[in-house]
Length: 491
Ligand SMILES: *[C@@H]1O[C@H](CO)[C@@H](O)[C@H](O)[C@H]1NC(C)=O
Ligand SMILES: *[C@@H]1O[C@H](CO)[C@@H](O)[C@H](O)[C@H]1NC(C)=O
Ligand SMILES: *[C@@H]1O[C@H](CO)[C@@H](O)[C@H](O)[C@H]1NC(C)=O
Ligand SMILES: *[C@@H]1O[C@H](CO)[C@@H](O)[C@H](O)[C@H]1NC(C)=O
Ligand SMILES: *[C@@H]1O[C@H](CO)[C@@H](O)[C@H](O)[C@H]1NC(C)=O
Image (cartoon, rainbow, N blue to C red; front, side, top):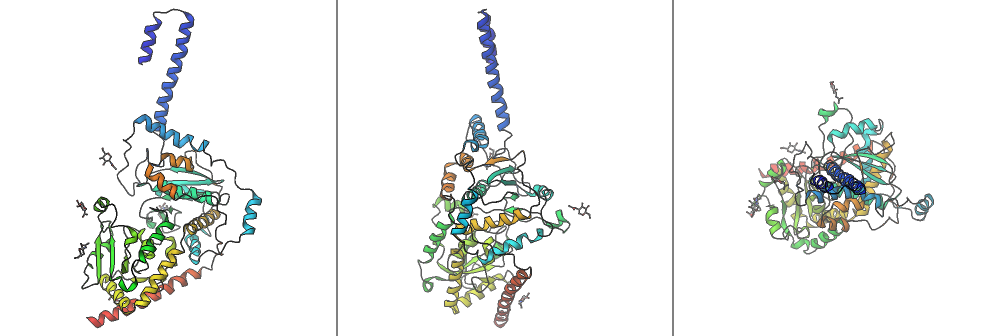
């Protein structure tokens, strides 16, 4: 408006037609820019981003939304538009052609990939509900009310439709993982349409939505703090600092009990090294932060012979760290599965602890282990070996096969919805702050894999999984029986 007044004022002094013409053009131009800035502002304030701009938290799990007050409004608008709409279009990696058919075949024939580990079979079990019915686009759309975002992969490109904000930077790291997969196995990942939730509890109330019929196809992802391969090495090294004989002979748990987890609350009652041979340490992140995370360093936490795993609000990332320690893992009857936890066999690579009579059950395990140190050590070693076999290559292999098998079940051709944006490495990095960038770059896949993913064996017959579960349950019941009898003898 100020500009307009200035023009009216100056035009009253000069009457030259060309001058007026010039001013009219200039004014139009300014108006256009003004309009454009206004529109962009409007546009930016409606654009949902992978870091959470213009997104509400998921209604099924409210959390403090992020504040974006550190930058000015214009800087923010500019960033949103730049990162969301312009970056992938000019990105170096985008538009790189898929490898040719010959190149792919060449790769397949020169290097025969090894068979995938046994637990990859569970991909079939997890997808079993849909083998007969398959998955329609309607089914995907129905899942939307439980999803935070939807990804559509078409010809190796990633499109994302955002519905709700995710806590922390979960969305960013999830998408990064998928982009790395697309890079590693370029030209091999099929077109697919997937709904994701990103909150802690990966369950949907069956009765509420389903009338007990078919489950909704919803995916959950996991966030890694540090590149896993490196982390594993660190933990393993830490675990070797002390020989088995020198490790502390009681059970140990350190973590945050204030996460609405009944089992963790119960675990607090076992904190008595004399009665229960158990030590429980409450992790205070505020204090840890002050101390530079020295105490919570994962590699320093393998000094006990027995390490307890207790699920939190839902499943907990700590399982893989506990299994990596080489200590005897005491798992309190887990309800959730991590993709690798199907590799767990009671008494082979972990010790099952019962949630009923928890402290007694832990004490029973410790007594057994101290009476049978070489067996206890061997179980711990096998748990560590299981985790050693889960390299990032395996993780990408698992993602690849899960997505490929899922894609086969979809009976439609995936098309990105009109509200979806393309996301590429560059656009994701564009939104990342310095610390995030560092973590992302550290976990980046260096290049297209020179070997194809491991070979997934064909679908086992349906009995396989029932027998598998029964065998494990039998071992657990057997132990519980021994435990009951030993308790009876004491009391
Ligand atoms: C965002 O700002 C509001 C108001 O200033 C504040 O109450 C809230 O705690 C902030 N949220 C976060 C996550 O910092
Ligand atoms: C579930 O069943 C009820 C009553 O039988 C029906 O009204 C409702 O539409 C069903 N819901 C779904 C999602 O099929
Ligand atoms: C468990 O007991 C030890 C020793 O008495 C104590 O230092 C620790 O704070 C206790 N842990 C919890 C969670 O109360
Ligand atoms: C964690 O430590 C801080 C600082 O020492 C303290 O103010 C806070 O109350 C502690 N929190 C818990 C849950 O113990
Ligand atoms: C062990 O004892 C508990 C409670 O006393 C009982 O619920 C459970 O069925 C028993 N388990 C076995 C395998 O005997």
